Every structure is written in structure tokens, then in C-alpha cells.
Image (cartoon, rainbow, N blue to C red; front, side, top):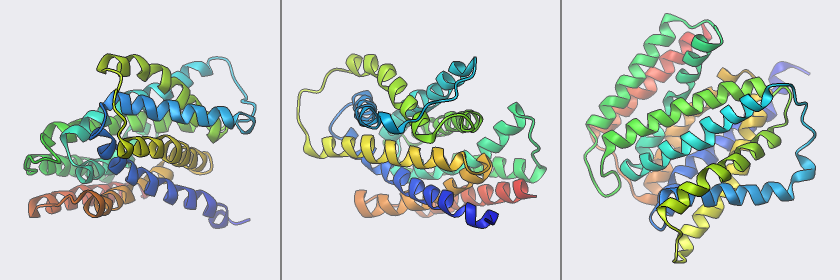
Length: 293
């Protein structure tokens, strides 16, 4: 079987994962209109956990090696724990479309992390692309006016960037573990640890006392479709191809998120925001070209 043929299924899995992740920004915005951020994230994690309990026979028998618990805990600490804290409060302060643009820096952060921690080669072109993408992200934040959908875009976009740093750490650890553990098992570990982590935070913010159908449906969508679907598909793909190639598909996330945000949430972009977003994507493109070289 040729390499291009063997990558077809992982590629399709990544495309589906990106589409689901794009929709998660929209679903989170909708859920946050009804419930507090930590309550939403905990409900998402516990929903996914119950689903995995039903799927226990499919999780497989892990090939545990001594010391793997450190990697498993570190993986879950990066994502969902710290990642969702940063992203939840990011989306309270910025728009879904802008958050999607900031997420385009993830592939470059993974390449930079691989250079710093795994001693993988990184080119000057990749570094230049990283600087341009970050500069575009700052420009996007500074030229984003405050409104109902983005009351503090500068803070929100910075928190989203921190979320992407956590996602980069998660991806690097995931690649290390994927040779011994099934994608579904690793996704289940994320949900289980996330449920324990977010429970006290949700209790601190207060137990919801109202039933908001739109918010409940958004949480169920996040817990079942996005957590199981997107993370399961992404984890599977990372186990079948280089991590840098897998994360390159995240470049599609800004476009998909922006389209969904406009269609569903009615968000809009100013001319300066469009130009700044273009700079972000240009930096990502340059960084990817350097990485390929």
C-alpha cells in the first residue's frame, strides 16, 4: 500500500476533527450565554466520561510502561485542564472568529516545541513565520473593537494564545504515547482526568439552578460529538502520521470558525481585522514552508 493511500483515512479523520473543533467555538459561546464557564467545561467532561464508560470494551488493553503515568497526567494537564481554562475565559472576552484565527499559530508552536524539547530541526523560515503569525495575532487584538461578542479582545486573544501553547504541549506528549495506547483510550483519559479537575472549579462558581435548553444542547454537543469525535479522530491521526503534518491541518480552523461564526452567531470583521487575520495566516504559511524545507 502506498504512503498516499495509507494516509487517506487519517487525512479524512483530521478534516472531520477540524470541522468539529471549529464548531466547538460556536457551541461554547452559546453555552456560556446560559451557564458559567467552569460549569460548562465540567458538564462537557462528565458527559464524555459517561460515554466512555459505555465504550469500555472498545478502549483496548494499554501497553503500559513504567513511568507512563507522568506522561498521561501531563497530557491531560495540558489538555483539557489548562487548555480549557484559558479557552473558556478567552471566549468570554473575544469573538469565536478571532479565537479561531489565533488557533492558527498551533502548528508553529508544535514545531517550536519540537525544536526546544525534542531537538528536532527548525529552519529560519519557520522562525520567521512564527514571528509574523504572532505579530499578526497582536495586530488582530489591538485593532479589534470592544463589542457585545468581544468585550475585551486583547485579553481574550492572549488567553487563546496561551491555550494554543497548552495544545502544543499536549500534541507533543500525545505523539510520544500514541505508539502504545489507542486513540480512544487516550481520549478517555483526558475526559476522566478533566472531570475530576473541573469538578471543584464548577462547584466554586456555583451549581446551575436553571434549565436552559439551548445551553444544555450545546453542552451535550460538546461532550459527545466534539470531545469523543474531534479528539478521537485527531488522536487516531496523530498515531498514523508525523505530529507536524497532523497539526498542519489546524490551518483550516480559522476559516471554518470564521464562516460558522458569521453564519450562526452573526459576527463580523472590520477591514483591519481582515488584514491582521491575513498576516496571521501568511505567517503560518511561511512557517509551514520552512518546516517542509
